[in-house]
Amino acid sequence: MKALNLGCGSRFHPKFVNIDAVSSSPHVLAYDLQKGIPFPDAAFDVVYQSHLLEHFKKENALDFLKECYRVLKISGVIRVAVPDLEQIVRAYLDELEKVLQRPEESERNYDWMLLELYDQAVRRRPGGAMLEYLKQDSIPNEAFVCQRIGVEARRIIQASKERASASKSHDERPRDYVARLRSIPRFFRARLLKMILSDEDYRALEIGRFRSKGEVHQWMYDRYSLGRILKRAGFQDPQAVRADESRIPGWTAYHLDTEPDGTVCKPDSLFMEAVKL
Image 1 (cartoon, helix red, strand yellow):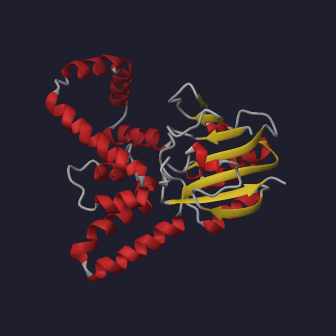
Image 2 (cartoon, rainbow, N blue to C red):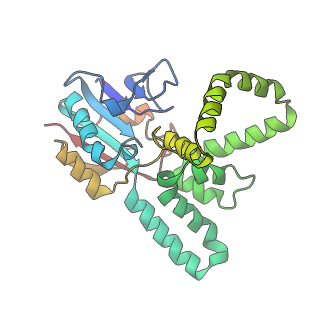
């Protein structure tokens, strides 16, 4: 089986061809998928992508899925994982009903669901308000948040605690000095732009740079809309599946949607598969 993992981030398998905008491993090819998929027609038996499609503008998502169709062999399988708009909205409505009845018990969960709905679409800085929430010294509804977004939340919370601990026990000045040296060229570019632009225009430029880098969500999908766009791209028989369920042989052994213990990596996801006939 020849398999392709698009927008892999730090979750990849050496038996897949893994692609991301920035390579985090010798097993990951760096490539801008906005330019298409850099492989010939009918090159793969499987195309997999997780939390990637929502980063394409709505008007570009169909062309990207047609690229996925192009590189798949006949009878090949595409597997797509995206944030599940239906699940998020249902959870939001549940928390809304609860907070209206018992605000002192439910307000934190309600606030988190609003972040899930909107933050990654509107944020103007890396991580946005969700990252700020996860970096709190104490998260009163940590269990709820981890249940919602899984391993990702646990890793951010743990990393934040480790950084806080390290900052108390180590002198950070040498590292800061090196970082300043490395940023000199960027510093001079920024200084020149600040001389030319007004404060408002420079801030708009910084926001525009960030929002064009691919972190923000450009669209959201549910079972109906994801199945519909897969059909429009040429795929047949789109089906919503579980994280541990697949037409791909031996899927769970790759640990892309589940951990070795069976835990779902991104429980807020909609998983859908379709075939090229």
